[in-house]
Length: 268
Figure 1: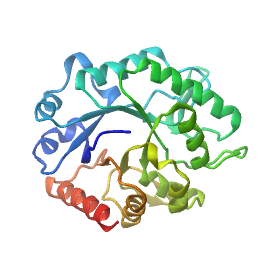
Figure 2: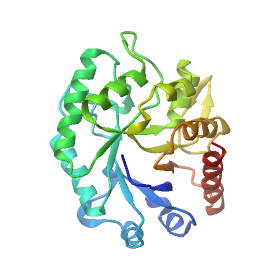
Figure 3: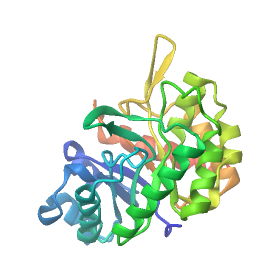
């Protein structure tokens, strides 16, 4: 779906200087809700000036909800992409609000035929509102809906077939679902429509009372990198991006993590 992106890192204001000086950062991703298209941070303008692709990543669209995606949120995503000259935008296959109430979390979509028809329509509306392609990310879940009729891979496969939407595969989220829900991550890879792959997320987390929490605040576990290697054995991802959202380490640690990602890709 996307041009070759390489290996990247999530840009955050707290590590803007780090991202600028890290060697080997081929592309970055920015949380769309945290920027204003008309007043981009100087760091992002600098990176764009160097030719580094910047992808807006939304967290609040709620494209998996029963209501149509909000026009203002779509307009903001589109404006971000235009201001940054982005090759695509990404969001989550999740619902975040209903009946005017915000869940404050990315909740899994019920994998039913009824839900699929709603999501297909929502994705088509989003695609019409965006000047660049859209990719949707699989989410980490702490629970599954009892009425699910399809696996996540089957749901995503039918969604891709119906809409042509791209996929942002988060291998850390696959690992989370493996630990918390018993859903085998590598088996999920075999069912996913990897021809629609736009790019990949990797991140760290921690275990608490037997549940894995995808916190994006630690080094990437080897188990997550093993899933990345398994993915790369099946297809060549256009890009792989490291997410880190708190407890930021030194530049040296970030450089090591990007190196570990490259090593995991090369193992395939």
